[in-house]
Image (cartoon, rainbow, N blue to C red; front, side, top):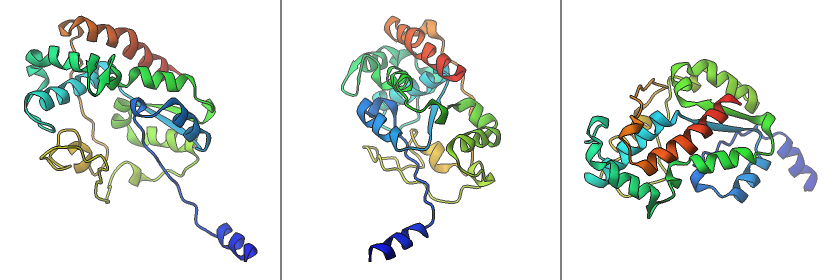
Length: 219
């Protein structure tokens, strides 16, 4: 019986398992355990000037309108910036700006155990030239490239993080771009004006977020 099972296992098709984790939500211990059994680690980052603009817009809408709303644009952020900054610095879901993810991701990046099987992907570069970047990723991950990775997505979008919102995946501002996508689309967003931000938030971006991003994309 044991021999039959071993024979069947050797003929089983190869299965690729991809997991996505937010740096601020995974513990240091779990990250190391996961990386130890992974063939590759792909780090996805965006320029903080753009990434933080997106986060502030989403949070302002959640606070002032309702979760998942898309009524407040970047030009209308002004009246809500102080409240959002306070929640990021000391709120129920974020302490010392932990929700931005930058302190967590650079800490995990410094402790990675297999740098040769690790690649940093800049989100802007990926959407501008998905085929070229994806070919770099699959080379590190030991996978085969297919054009269907970049365009022509067929499967429906499933969001395991349901949350609390009257909006479904295709109308919720947090998820609608991904839920409606059939491939990579370039999204241009104006960088944040750092001088317009509260001191504590500006300090976090300039002393933690930007240096972390710069170090990772330069490696």
